[in-house]
Length: 369
Ligand SMILES: NC(=O)c1ccc[n+]([C@@H]2O[C@H](COP(=O)([O-])OP(=O)(O)OC[C@H]3O[C@@H](n4cnc5c(N)ncnc54)[C@H](O)[C@@H]3O)[C@@H](O)[C@H]2O)c1
Ligand SMILES: [Zn+2]
Figure 1 (cartoon, rainbow, N blue to C red):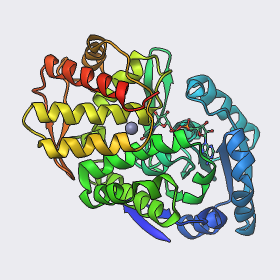
Figure 2 (figure 1 turned 180 degrees about the vertical axis):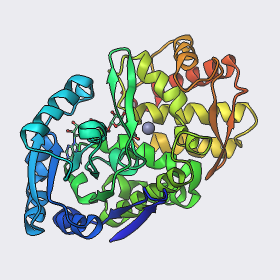
Figure 3 (figure 1 turned 180 degrees about the horizontal axis):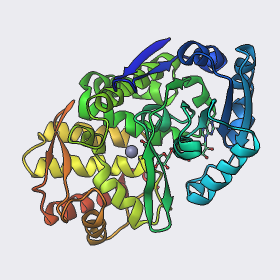
Figure 4 (figure 1 turned 60 degrees about the horizontal axis):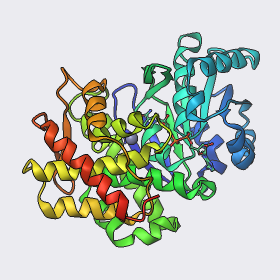
């Protein structure tokens, strides 16, 4: 079992990664959390159908009492109504201050269960057991939890660090290709911002990764988790360092918003956002041409992406109104080489429009659909 620490003083925790780890989840919880009287497993119906058995048997084997609560997990259910339903179900299941919540699902389940755990009886401990690639390398680590309002995404929430994160790459077997690739773009992001070796390995072994070859995938997940865990360890709350995780997200978030969250999965929007950032970096004289080319190439090699079909001015408007934009001046995370970035607030609207025009043109000829 690989152990990657997230160092946050008294709130420190471990991320454990191993194929088949689900079957040892109960034992891991016992070992890392001591006496756990009872657990409340929060999951979605389809994840329960596919993967409940190994988790349930491991909890039984570890003599941990548990209840399973299912809630719907589409992005459209990531709201306060679902939180209320979940909190009521927790009361009915008899959750009390001695209970531990287990979030068992993708990023939506992790964010919803995490937020519910942070407020139920003023806070219950949570264990994250992420089941999508995106949640394994990103959402489950770092303690951000929350839900959407109809007026904007992730506007309500809390920082609530997990006590333990259990990653079993085997559960990705049942993930759709599209969801898998969407998560892979966050893996690529980790390489670009902080791990040149990971990026090179992806360049070399992309077909194996796409075929979900166990050992190649394991290494990619491990390296990405290390990047996220290191960044979070050094900067728990959205300070300067944590902002590097937003590489590709400035244009990415705007693309999602401009298409009403209907066209792109989050990772897909980030994919185009990374290509746009590479172009912007190149034009601003920050990103060497060869580096921009490598970013563009690896993204396009991952397979089809939904085409970009938005007006550059719309993207600009969304960027200027983003909650992360200070005083209307966007901050861009731009690669200086593979594995390192800088943050620039000197990007002109013309450069942004040009980059959006470029991804639009690229998506026309990349076999995008
Ligand atoms: N808290 C954070 O730091 C953070 C970071 C990144 C993203 N997020 C959030 O995460 C969410 C996106 O997460 P996501 O991409 O995991 O999407 P998701 O949770 O919606 O899951 C995607 C789909 O995959 C299904 N699924 C999950 N695991 C499966 C498995 N093993 N096999 C088959 N199907 C499976 C789900 O039922 C769902 O239909 C967004 O709401 C985003 O805001 C949070
Ligand atoms: Zn992201």
